[in-house]
Image (spheres, rainbow, N blue to C red):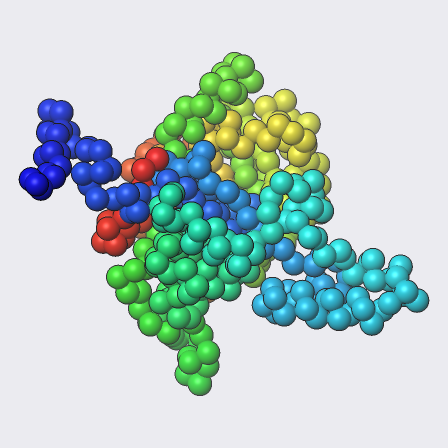
Length: 425
């Protein structure tokens, strides 16, 4: 009997590549689906979704979420690992018992489904066993599973998935997990997360505390360094937003100044004095603006937003978003001619800097520790300038847009290729 011989792989048309999977030998190496592990915080989940989008898996991913009990005493327990927090909360609830049922409710509820408290019952609770089982049982039919997560609360979940199903998954952890990077296939984190290893960082920490400050080692080959945060803002998203918001923004007088105001953070503390300084500077540049759009974030203190509304709310050139849907954020990114943004938000600055338009920063001098390194990098690359109130907003300047998400996606594809896997969107 003659041996059966498979035909040679067909030649790629015009040398462009791309042959059927049977000839590529990637029946079990084609990634066609992904799992996102979220933590309920938009800034973190936006990074994972942005990477999924850049990899071409927007319509082929499932969102799971790590939940913590919220309210009452739970606000004092957020420093604990999620699993320990939940167990401790359960014990507290049992001790309270029937006699303290009303008080126990004030401690917060423990959602059985992620997002149950906010009307997102379709989002699944991130359960290691079920995700591992799914990855193993569907590997032969559907190939490897890409797992992407961001935020401290997701670390124990993703590292466990990697440990239990290492042959079936590729795990990407966004934001530095602080220790044992070998628990993940790839770590994506901003360069400023390594500030503690710089001479400037070491000078700010007493020598006896050095061993307690992480990370301890410089980035290795499976760490992808970015300038800022990953996000969903790319050319296609901006083009779509421009069309969606055309009716509202196209008629506005130019130049359009968009002002994004955040709130104080651990590494960027400021009070009402900076907000008053901002409103005074905005008054100074109104003459060179055609229109001004102002938005606040979830972290903006009410006393800060009230100052802005009081000082600028009645000016005919100024419109202040009231927080109601639809959120004009993407419209602002698409239609703005220039941005003024408070220094506290890496996410807002990263998105604005991806447009290639002028970005002015307020309050960078108030930032400390690794945030100083972040703002230094933005200035040195020509992405941002300090906002002084002396600017002529009709004078434009530009720079190569920040493209961290695309760079990170490229590195993910390279790492997958080293393992013999590739994404088949």
